[in-house]
Amino acid sequence: MHALGEALPLWTVLPFAGLLLSIAIVPQVAEHFWHHVRNQLLVALGWAAPVLVGLLVLGTRHDEVGHQALHALQHAGLEYLSFIALLGSLFVISGGIHISGDLPGRPWVNTSFLAVGAVLANLVGTTGASMLLIRPVLHTNLERKNTWHIPLFFIFVVSNVGGALTPIGDPPLFLGYLRGVPFLWTLERLWAPWTFAIAVLLAIFFAFDRYMYRRESPERIALDDRAIRPLQVTGRVNFALLLLVVAAVLLLSPGDDPADPRRFHLRELAMLGLSLLSMWITPQSVRQANAFAWAPILEVAALFVGIFVAMIPATALLETKGAALGLSAPWHYFWATGLLSAFLDNAPTYVTFAATACGRFEVCTTADQLGTLAADPSASHVLMAISLGAVFLGAGSYIGNGPNFMVRAIAQRAGYRMPSFFAYCGWALLFLGPTFALVSLLWLR
Image (cartoon, rainbow, N blue to C red; front, side, top):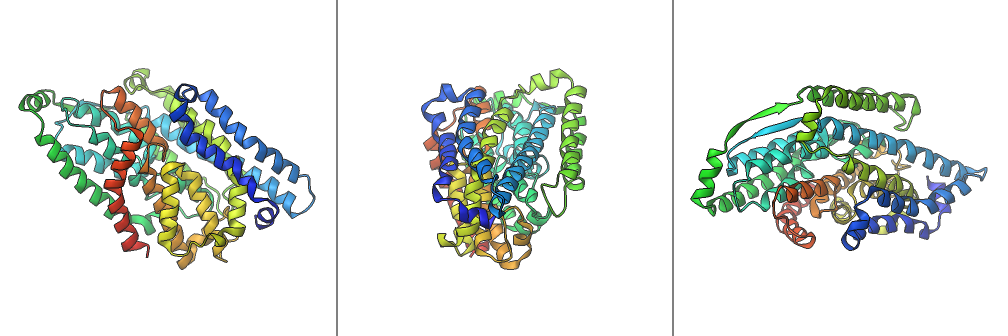
């Protein structure tokens, strides 16, 4: 989209910036207004409307700029539908699996929960893994008093860092897959820093949880021991449906053009069909036990319909002029991507900095085709840094990644004392900062 990037003035990124700032600020200053999905949709569409109109006007031109403007809108629409189809199917199907029972709320049990969640996040997404495991984790520790740190580390490990090995794991990586990054590229390139970060965070959590456990009174520990019941899983057929979603992503995704509608329809229709099948065959009592509600996925759908349109000018401009930002070393991209991912949204941030990298490397001509960026050794190292920054530092605040909000809300409803917005950021800086600094030092110099 170099011709489009040359034609667009710099101020056309303002709707994108305004939408992201609205997502960050409005929930803090107008919580009641933001609580309604309808209002979120109105905000998203309000910011996206000027970009949509402007690109349609450009599309009336009979030249390369007009062609690229219309192509960008078409690509954004198809990519949005693919994005929502994947997240929606994982959300619906995982909501049909209920894990009941009560294990002892001891440090090794809680650490095992987080370790399992980190692996599971790559199979069913950070959203799916968070929905599956947060309630059993909270119920397991309900008899304890000193537990505020447990959902905090759950957000760190399960809702964010864990999902870095597959495009299924986290939304930024799925957007990369839709734009041409091979499915197994993330596993091949990110497994070493992923293993290191997960091991360090689990070790920190175990030590901290052990300290907090020793502060529990004997009465609470005895109450916890009396409440032990074996784990039981209902709705297990949905595990097979989750595997079929992964199969649909692998087998029905297009090759050279991620937005090719010929196979796009098959992939997305398969995901829709699997979601409907899950709703049909899963007893309603299972979803009721999970307190299943549509609000979280509707919020994602409402906001991202605006994001996918509003980010087109930013992507086009960064492809053309990204080299002027002065980012050179992989660790520059890691921290630049990560800091924005922590306070805005990690999926569009990933695309934005991938476009910046495309503006720097000659092997990549457009952010719609990141496969060439992944294939080149030096460019691939930068894409690795962008991927790690977007996924890892999505844990930097409550607004960095969708599951963060969901886990916080579920924990608060269960009676857990969650840190405030700024307190959470402080704890994230304390626990995550040194870990990620070591990651950048060891792999991203």
